Image 1 (cartoon, rainbow, N blue to C red):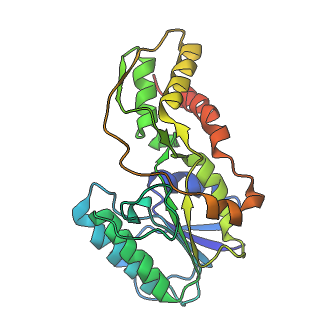
Image 2: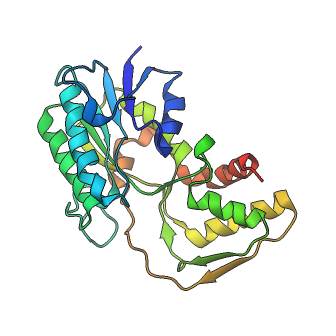
Length: 274
């Protein structure tokens, strides 16, 4: 069985992905801080790197996302260990949508810049690589439940509190975390997708429609009509990601995240504490 080293298991996606990997692989969780990894001390068959500083921690971005990743690369025992690297849509320069994988990389923020630097480090390392640039990831996730906006909105509606949204009607391409976690293990097989970068996103869905679906499910389960107020808000900051390359490369996966949204809402509501 292939040994997979997974970093960032305490995070939102890492928590879900670890559960999906354990039945299929010999899973090793990196417990040490990235900066403390000893050179050539790691001997996995593959690495999935999720660990990193979040966007709002600007002072930590370079230290964790670049220097930490550099330490991880030095810790690998040989230079041909495949690496699945989670980057971000934040690497792209301001650009009209949809953003494609060959769109300019020139982020104006520290988080995006640190991800660009890490991508370049990986490209120069000689390791087989797969760079993934996901959109916003949302959902419910064990003890991580409640941190996402969707979970907070659901709790407010269940308590019969008015939910006020300062967002214009617009499409979003956010990914449900369990959809992504279920799909990722299939990437570890050999194939033409290696040594490339891919956007990861769900097909666009109107955000107001998603919230109204959530309200309908709350009403069905709780017996009261949720109150929602839609107020004018700023335009979308991030354009949508293009999935053309993804669909061309992975047609056999049959991945349809948009079909899982309502199911995810129902399952999440049942799991939320009162």
